[in-house]
Length: 152
Image 1 (cartoon, rainbow, N blue to C red):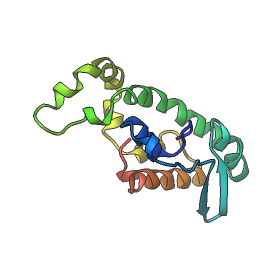
Image 2 (spheres, one colour):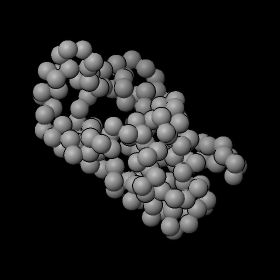
Image 3 (cartoon, helix red, strand yellow):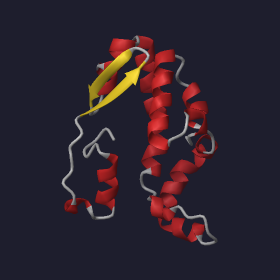
Image 4 (cartoon, one colour):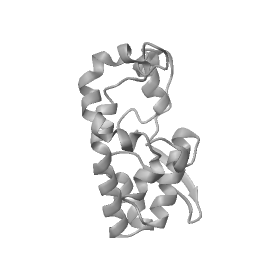
């Protein structure tokens, strides 16, 4: 949610065409409470690494974060083109994916990664303790599960 609208619920309601019926509260920042204290950061491109990462980590951690972000690009760009409604668990699951065949071709080389946990993917790029803790908290915020149980 680093692009507007930042509110993930609004993104879902936009997708289903129901967002105009709700008076949305705009999110400008996120707040966190960690062992280092409480802090907030303004949402938007490059804001996290230019503010929070500089405050709590070092240049190595910022490079690790940027490398992780780069590694995620092919996964997210293809996956973003496959809507959730096309992911079915019944006998017709392949039929629902046919309109998105080119996106599936783009993400197919990464099937081993996508079949694993976010932690195993993250561990390939991140060694900084503070950044790992934050990414674990983010995984939990998004999935309700720790990073080792959150899908990549």
